[in-house]
Image (cartoon, rainbow, N blue to C red; front, side, top):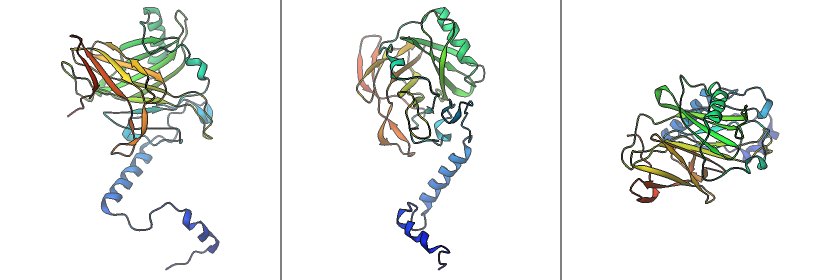
Length: 281
């Protein structure tokens, strides 16, 4: 056995969290997969130049390595995480409402112009837009089953959107629900903070998916018990809320599992509580 050249470092041995024995085959496979995930991520993570807490662009869940402890990631069909820039606080979301309202054509056009250039999607198609207080969300789809959501601060009638954040990831994965089915698409958490863990904004969660032709309404129960009515339009739904989407449990891939549930209302007024989303085959 080779002795430590610096014996005084032996005192740190008990603090070493690395395994004391060789990894078995399964553990080695998981370790190699995790290494590839880390190496695959852009080291700048899409930072737009606002320093250590600048806006960061999301990647599909299977390619994300969380850069700070506040990040969370999981995968159902696909999930994304965003670490937005500073500039917002708790009061910014005081106008948020669990029931969405429609957005005027003028406001939709202003938000679309602000969001479209930042999504990094190939020929994005705007599928859905909703308003909750002073904030709007736009849902886009693109080629290769990609989807993106853009959150922007845009009080009604104003000419410029600000505080724009967005997520991007796999969309329908080539699977479209029928009848009373629905899918769970990307789930994203916007978490504010810097490298020292000092919060700059409250947590925000967004999600979207597809619905079959018989689905009239989608209501999401959040981890803290809020009931959030999604906007349902042209076979798609989207919603967002101040708060979390993930819980403490882990999925099989090691990421945190979503802690939300769904109530589906069909066009014949049938209500399906704790409904299970369909997943791609």
